[in-house]
Image (cartoon, rainbow, N blue to C red):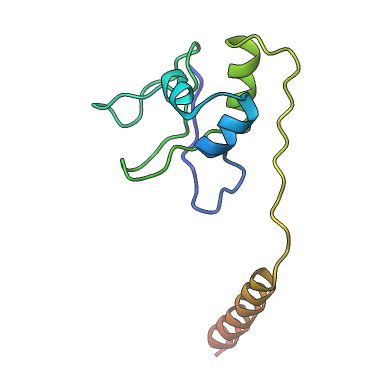
Amino acid sequence: MPRRRRPEPSDSNLLSIEAVERLLNRSRASIYRYANLSPDVLNLPFQADRLNPELRTSREDPLRFHPNEVARFARDILGIQQVSIEVVQPEETVTHDLLRQILAELQAIRQVLTDK
């Protein structure tokens, strides 16, 4: 049985329900019907005939799907022959630049503190 990895908070390569809807050209309701979900069990074992979400730590965590899993499901189960999923990194913004500067400053402060 293939192992799924636990999503990390910074893992921006995972796809949301909305992204899967657009990629598969299916409604939200059909994505939920395809997905390997249960109201009683948080993380079900892998099922080859279902769309398997990434592992979640609580029910409040949003459903996220790995692009390879969506492509596998589209190709093997839905029979979509031309499957290409491209994950695009978000554009650089002023916020990203500011966060990078804050990180650099914190790293410099840490370096000064550890050198003493």
